[in-house]
Amino acid sequence: MRRFAGLPLALLAAVLAGCGSSGDDSSSSASTEPELVVFGAASLAPAFERYGDEIEGADVKFSFAGSDDLAAQIRQGVTPDVYAAANTSLPDELHEEGLVEKPTTFVTNKLVVGVPAGSGIDDVADLEEPGVTIAIGDEDVPIGIYTREVLDALGPDASKAILGNVASSEPDVAGIVGKLTQGAVDAGFVYRSDVDAAAGRIEEVEIPPEASPDVAYGIAVTTEAAQPELARRFLDGAVDGKGQDILLDSGFGPPPE
Image (cartoon, rainbow, N blue to C red; front, side, top):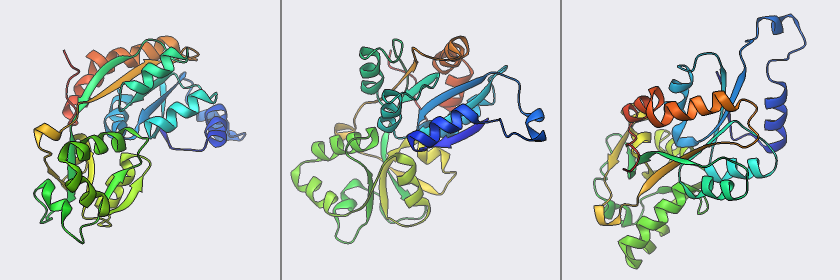
């Protein structure tokens, strides 16, 4: 199982087309299993990589990045077998465009404020204090969209103060997590699953329930999937199988009833 994180379109296409063909004797040891290519939101990386190890009869390759970036690559002609986004709107849009089969909502998540372990920040209101440095997602990616929903719900004064403390805007949640684990910022808006995956390096500050957005993830098989049967098996397991178990164990919530 190999991972390609946020590669440029041309490079990603070349990698997906040529990975495993080195042209030397080492190619004889390459896997003969069919390749299953999965595009996934950055927040899915730890859980999906565990799940990928459970898929028998396939060499699972992942590309993790912002959901919008992955959707743009699909629109430009890069065709994975499976697309999983940190919202439901992007898979729905791709379905309307004929690029993916009907999507399924397969997990939920919670938006939280992540802080480095041992931080003195223990309330969302602390983010308004002068000198606090914050990382957020770009405004066109799911983590950034959810964050702005929170800020709108907190009110104009709180929103203005928090945005005034933004020191870094990232293209996906992995960038925010990186800033937190490096100690480059005091706080960042991330998913609860990211806190779980950080193994104690990040702590969670809850967002008030009245300001907490509904976070749901959509998954779909692409209409031009090279491995449609394997792709549907991957999807089925993520919805109700080993993949779902791993996702729930990784801090995600079950899909809405």
